[in-house]
Each structure stands twice: as C-alpha cells, then as structure tokens.
Length: 437
Image 1 (cartoon, helix red, strand yellow):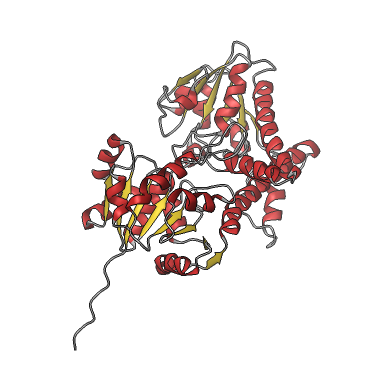
Image 2 (tube, one colour):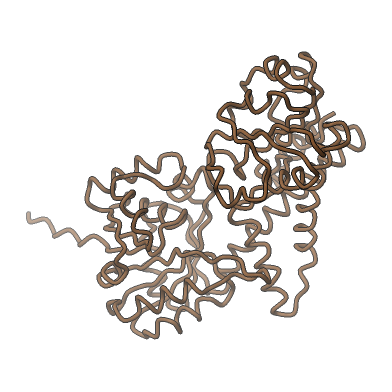
C-alpha cells in the first residue's frame, strides 16, 4: 500500500533572538519545524551559527546543536528572506519600558512594517513580545495586509528553566479575532499536549500582565510576612512552610528574599499600572506592591549597615551574588544591584563574587564601587560584613569557618536564607536571615 506523502514541514521565522526569541526558535525546531531566527547583531548571529548560546540557560546549547545539525534551525540577519517563505512569523523583539512606565512598541511596529511587503498570503504573524493591551491592532495596522492574520501568544518563561517551561507549559494562550489563524497556531503547539486557551487579543495580552503582577504581589506579601516574623519573634521558614501546604496558596514564589526584579516583573507591573491609568482605573494595590518591593531594597541595605556596625562610610562589604536570580547571567533590574547601589551610596566599597563572572564594564554595574572577585572567599577577605543576595546553590556548601577566618568582621546578612544559622554561629559569625528567629 502506498504511504501518503508526508506534509511539508512548517516554515517559521523568529524575529529577534533575545531570551524569548532564541528559546522559541530552538524549541520549535526541536518539534520538527524549519526555523530561521533573525537578529540585527551580525556578531551574535555568527556565534549562534557555531552553536554558541549568547545567554546562560540550562540545556540550550545542546538543543541549539541538535537544531543546527539537523538543518531545521538556522540564524540570519536577513529579515526579508526569513519572512518571505514563512507560514508563521514570531515577533520576539524588545518592548523596553518607557519613562512613564509604559511599554515601548517601536521595535514591534518597525519589525511589522519591515516584513509586511514580503509576507506570503495566509501567513500568521505571532506577537510573542510582551505588549500592552490593544497592541494586536497596532500590529495589524503596521502590516496593512488583510490577507494575513495577527495572533497574540504571550510567553511564560522563567529564566533558568526556559526550555522546561516552553516544552512543558502549564497552558498555551492564543488571542485572535481570526479563529482559523488561532487554530493554525494551536496545531503548531499540539505536540506539547498542553491546555490551550483561545480568546480575544486583549484578553490574551492581559493574561500575561496579570500573571506577573500576581506573582510580584505574592513575593512582596511573603517578604512582608518575613519582616513581621522578625518583629514578633516568629520563624519565617516555619510560617511559610505552614502556608505552602494550603492548596489555595501553594509553595511557588513563597521564599522570602531581597525583593523581586529581572527582565519581566518590574517592567510588566509598571506597564500594567500605566495601562490601568490610561483607562481611568487607579490600580492602587499594584502600586503598593511596587512601593513595597522598593522598600524591601532599602530594608536590606539598612540590615547591611546595622551588620557593619551602624555605618557604611569607608568600610568594605562582601557580596555573594549579583544576578537577579540563580541559573542565569541576567543582571537586568537585579535586586542585588539595587541593594548594593544603596550600600555604595552610603559610602561602602563592595567586594563581589558571582559564579557567572560578570564583566566589570557591564552597564548594569555602572555607578557601583565594586571589586570583582573570582572566589567567594577572596570576596570576604578583610570585610566587615557579608551579604548573600542571589540563591546560587554552591553558596550552601561553602566553608563558613574559612569565611570567618578571612573576614575582619563577623556579620552575615543572608537575604535568601541559604545558610544554616547554627553553623554560622558555631564558627563565631553573627547571622541575620529573612524573618528567621
């Protein structure tokens, strides 16, 4: 019996190879599609053609290599060539935060206008970038192609687990007024076996902002609980464990810490506040969440100052961790840097260690009196206090007796509750955690 011919692989173009774009391109190629990923940075494209990932993300380099060796994945600077033959074009370009807190759509609109004349009839343009509510209409206008469709498809990736999140999502959200186009995109995700929510574009765009705003609120709430525990003499670790077993609450995002940051939460909460203002609604709850987070940075800086003996002017402090979270090299809106900026403004010098070895010339580190160290013990040598800012697992296994022997002072401020208080105190260190008795 003659076998029916196999359908041609779906042709996909991914415009913008940042965190979301690269993960999307690599995973779509892994599912068997032919993917061209486009970036304007030619040096970056050359690196990716060699299989070198420009970001730190577990498993990404291996999956890139699989896509390149199979021929299903390629990288280019030619946006016209990539878009011309594509069945789907994913817009994964940046949407930076404007001065008023709103998301800047310039790159989305520019990319749409650039590809518009070259799209084939029936192509589906997918907005993967986080965009304000109503942006689907702006993309439709920029394209000016009634024979193509625009679909909103927000991403829900966590840095450090992006591949896992993409390939095993909790849900896939698709927003479009064109149900045929929405169905085509749903079919592209079908191999993942995830629940699919098909809705209108405004609802899809709002879902992304609502999720990040809620998670930011959850983190700020648990930080407030930890602060309360410190005030009343309760142990935040036990209190939060008791909360986490409640099925209505769950354990995710319940770890107290220095505050939230990164590439999504600050930008998306500010954008949602601005969206609400533009539509006549004062999102006071979310404004308070943002204010509470900023107050957390100051609270930790105050703890560091107290640990240093009540003054920071002219002293040297050690810091473990600079990235906004572990398992990533991302310094954008890092709580660690926000806290260290206040520490430096109060007159201190900081000896810092981070496993990713950030380049001291990185713009995110500007304005900080930092001495970058290649070893966590070197960072502690001669310092009056140590502050643990990022939850890198290796910090749990360091020799605290060696830390005590090289420090000039004896204070640890552990903003991630990584270290064992009894072990620290046993070697003569004073220990301050987040809400720990």
